[in-house]
Length: 307
Image 1 (tube, rainbow, N blue to C red):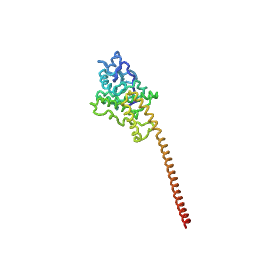
Image 2: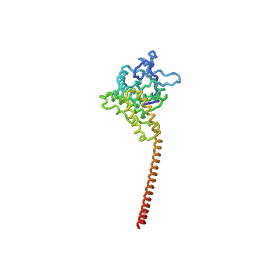
Image 3: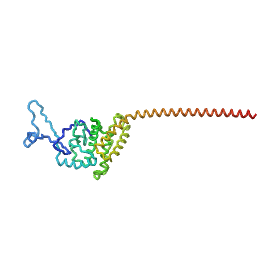
Image 4: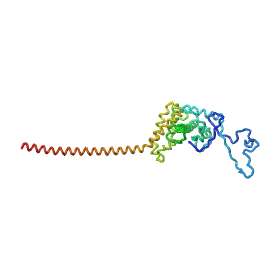
């Protein structure tokens, strides 16, 4: 799930760890006033300001590297999945995510280091569930990065056929190496659903689902099954899918005009056939008429000559 409006702070450059956690409600500097640290014998919140200023307290949160053990645990789960998918890593930010298990804010102005936000409840999840969330959001990031590389600007795909193809291709690669098969008991590809294909191509915006979903689903399945077995990196695969997606979308956009031309050509061809058949029938009638006339004439001449 992407949430372009979600605030993303600048990354902490002091740690290369893959995972980042939610900071405590206190300043980073250990020398800061004890009243803010909530030390023993001091208030846990700052004193109310004097005068006519507001007496409310603003909770301040800070994103900071996760504890080493938690980061190592998450890396042990995700690193093999990335290797199987042949993809580079995107940092993880553990935070409350509301209704969604995770999201990826594709806008580089809001998410410059391409962090993937995953719910802080991740510690209660099974590894397969964590991998599925990460791969889903990684597909968003790969698509957005490919578009930015090709177009030089941000183009949101959300859950369209291009996203579906990339996400499915990454899951097919996990299936190919039987990643966590013993835990899942089923194919990774079965995680895909129409939730991942809810946005139509721009040429079909406003159309009913039954008009475009079969075509879009067929296209996405074809691309995923064709590209997943290749040696392409996930980044190159995403770029290939994006390039093919726009070619396909342009073909779909021009399809109504092409169908209209084909229909018009078919009508003209039918009319031409009808005219030719009518001319042929007229010729046959004329031939029959001439045959009858010449037959009677021959009989008349024959009778005259032998009288």
